[in-house]
Length: 303
Image 1 (cartoon, rainbow, N blue to C red):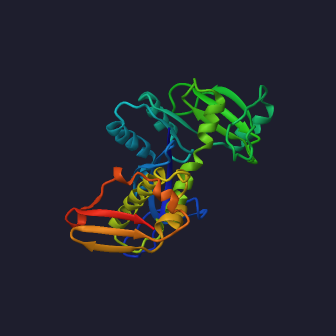
Image 2 (cartoon, rainbow, N blue to C red):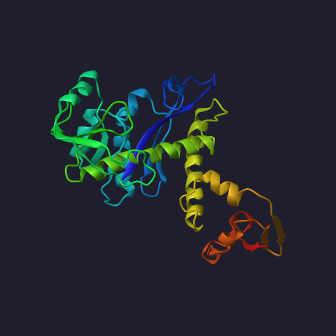
Image 3 (cartoon, rainbow, N blue to C red):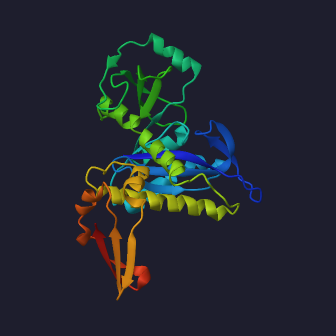
C-alpha cells in the first residue's frame, strides 16, 4: 500500500518565478513548488519525491511514480491510495490497464450528493482503529462507469464518518472486503501527517533561496532525515512509532563529552531518563567507525 499526496512548498523569492498552486495547509492558492510525496503505508517511510512539478505535468506524476516503483520493487504489486486532486480519470484508466490497483475519491457535485438520499441497501461496517472517532460508518456499494475511464469501477459511498457530506470512494479492487477498503483509504492521513512533520520539524517550508535547486535539495534532505529518524526509532524499545520531534527531545538533543585520542573517538553520554532504553540498543551490530575521520573507531559510553 502506497499513499500519494501533493504538497506546495511556499516560495517567496523574487528572482525566480514559480507557478501558483493550491496549498491545503494555508487554504489558498499561492506561489510555490508543487511536490509529490509517496509513502509506504506500513512503515510510514517516504519512498519518493518529485519537486517543482508544473501544473501541466501534475496529472502524469502517478505514472512517473509507477515507473520508479517498478524499477525498485522487484515485481511487488502495489495499491496506490490518493485523493481526487492527484490525477484524472483518464490516468486512472491507464493505471488499471497496467495492472495497478488504486483507491481514490470520486469528484462529487451537488447532484451526486443529492442522489444519496434515494439509495437503499446501506449497511453498517466497523473499521478497526483504536483512536478513530467514528469507527462504524454506513456504506453503500455499487458498480459505476465514469467518463474517460474504460471499464467498471467499484464505488463505495461512506456516510456517518464525521463529515457533513458523504465520501465517494472509487477503486478497481473488486475483491477486498469493504471494511478493509474503507480502512485503507482512511489511513491516508499518514502521508498527510508525514508531510506535516516535514514542515513543522524539518522546516520543509522554510526556503531561504530563490535558486530553484534549493527546493530540490531541501526536499531530498527532508526525506533523508525522515528515514534516519525512522531507523533510529526502530532500535528504541517502546519508541518504534514515535515521531521525529519526540525522538529529538528524548534522545538526540543534549550535551555529551567527546574525546579523540589514538585513533579512537570516545563519546560519553550524560545521565538522562532514557539511558536505560539506550543501553538495550545492540550497538555492537552498528558501524563503529567514523568515515570522516579516516575510519577512526567509535566508542560509546553511557553514565
